[in-house]
Length: 131
Image 1: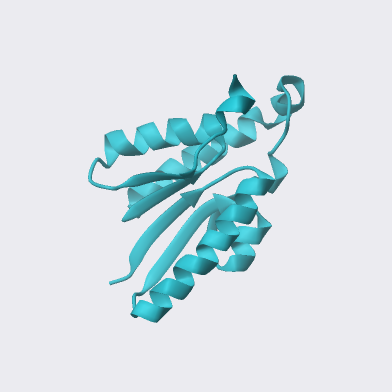
Image 2: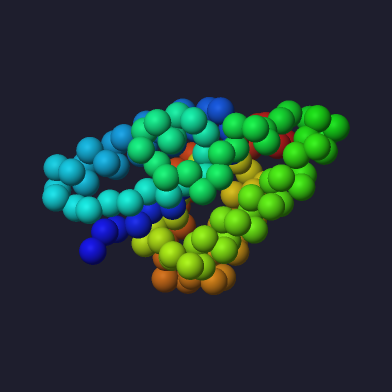
């Protein structure tokens, strides 16, 4: 039976780090003879690394309050789609990469709904950015 990992990120830097992580996880799983499926929310780099994207965040990223307003509805719809997908196909491990607002909310939601599934913050949001 395949091990299932879900990875979530939403920024360009997170997509890059996520892609590197996907490659490393796939390589290690192959070395150990473990069947691994990785679903993700991220960008083109993660998809190219072999993650099955539940949603591509490349088109909904922004910086600043006013700049982010057009992306509120698409981001909310994506969060609903993620939650539905994870309920239908629960992962064995969740990895969150930066993307503070959505990932903190998603992490809390997953811990409440799937308390047996480990949730790891691979790269936590940078405190200096938010202070």
